Length: 226
Image (cartoon, rainbow, N blue to C red; front, top):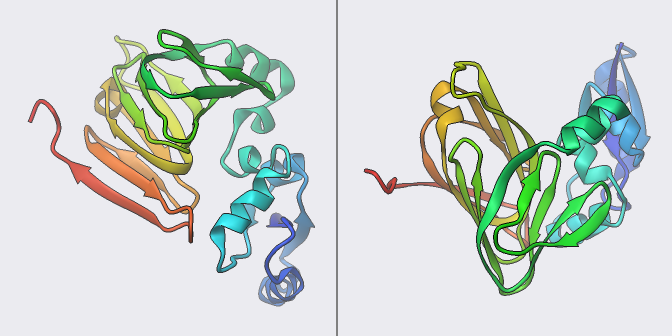
C-alpha cells in the first residue's frame, strides 16, 4: 500500500483535502496528515495543499524544521544516518564571488560564507537581502544566486572518466541562473523547484520563484561560449 503524506503547515483546507484523497484512493493508499520530516521523506507521494498567499505558505513551512528538506529530497532524511554523515563531508564546489552576505545551513547550523569557501553535498546555500553569490561546482557548473535565494546542493557525483555522472540541485526560493557543466554532458543533471524537476542537457537557464505566489518562471539564455 502506498503512503501519501498530506503536508500540515497550518494553512490550506487540510480536512477537505484529506477527505478527497480518501475517496479517490478507495482504501488503496494510506493518507497521513503530518509535518514530521521522517514521515514525509518516507512517503511514496506528497501533497502540499495550496493557498493564495504563497509567501505566507513558505513562512509556515520554514518555521517547521526539516520539512522543506524532506519534501525536496534532502539526503539527510532519505538515507541512513551513517551514509548521510559521510556524504555531508563531500566537497562539491566553492564560492567564487559574493556581494553582501551569504550563509550555508550545514547539519542544522547556519555558517557565514566568504569568497573561496568550499560548499559540501547536502548544504543549503542562501543569500541575504541585497546580496548575490557565485558558485562553481566540481564539474564546472556555475550558479549565480540573487538576493533572498535558497539553493540545496542535494547531490553531485562526478568522475572525469565516467559517463554515468549525476547531480541534483534544488532551488527552494528566489532567483538563480546557471550554466551546466560536465555532468550535463556525461550523465544526468537535474535542477528541482517546488513544482517540478528539470533534466538539464548543456543549457544556460534562469529560474525565478515568485515570493508573492510561488510561480516558477524559466528562461533559456544564450551560453557564454555560444
